Length: 505
Image 1: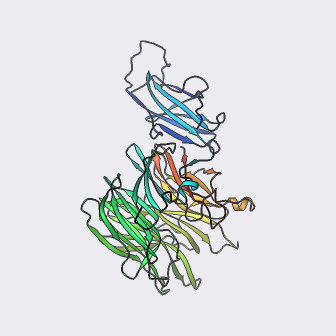
Image 2: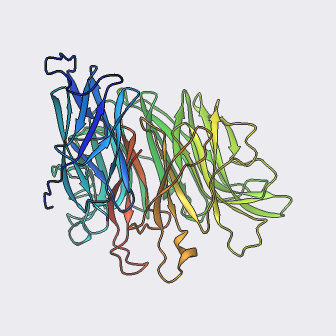
């Protein structure tokens, strides 16, 4: 990428003190740091942001803070323990811009990279189909895991990236490779000194597997086959590190259309196993029904309780039919303690997605069955979880996002500022049916669970229900990754690739 040197200055004065008014002034400043940088780099999309808030942490009590070299300047203000300024991006095109932060002679450097098309992390021409990207924050480092076919067989990889998406290039294979079946997907979680990997390979026809490896990919636990005899792997799964180990959820089927949701916990150090448990099984419409073949499930922790979100048909006596519902199961003491419907109000909804996110917060997409529309839009609802149960006064949940057309795959990234809600949104279909695409949207999530003003990354072209959008914090920012199909030819040949963007706040 071309290096372009553009001066950027952010100047600020401490309250009641003029900057540099006395050359003999002493200072107690010992360090300056860009809180939103990872590995000395930051990324922003000037097509999505006319300006961005740049935060600087200063150790000490500066009389003068500046970022850049010369004019133009943006006034900064003391913002709690930070210095913050809104930097206009209007005059800058795509490129790499050096930034120097200076406080009373103490400096820090970083690069701000701008790009209007996101950061492409895999290339279909060399990596072939990519899948299940996940970001992880470990101290000052950010790691990406994903799967691709770059070696001829599908392998799950690990690589470190900086805040502008540059890969270290020393990727490490986690599972798969020569002599192994293709890794169809791999979902990962970072422990204190290991990585838990939930993955699926071809079997009879598919098998779910779990292992623990180190950051170097070296096995720490012999692979566990998760599917019992006579059952096979289904689509969907999740993993989270909590309570000193890994909570793992996956789906199996009996080969005849009957599927279920299962859970286990593996201690990181002793490898002791709790479970497996059947979290949810199909019924005979009394009132529990069955499961769709393809949908996502999710797991999070709340203290000693493991929370699993899934969708299942439930018989509705008023409607006299099966209705797809979002449900959250609470697992405590090695058993399923309770299962709660996501909405218990008077409305009639069809739930198209169902997640449990950090908070813990249940987030689901639902269509109003009382709507007169042929295809009602999906509204994102949310409810907090307390004591292993969704809060009792939630009615149908808080309306988080309401807009035309469909939206799903909600994910929440906690940051030093507000949590960032990201989701896949199809409202462009309502705007222009000749050039529709599913796009990445993101917004800060308020304490009342309503979404603030959303940013649209207009260049994105997500794959319905399988984009896998997720992120990690970079200070108050959220760095997001997902699967994008912008270079695909048809729905049967989408050319999935991993992309990255940053949400600023």
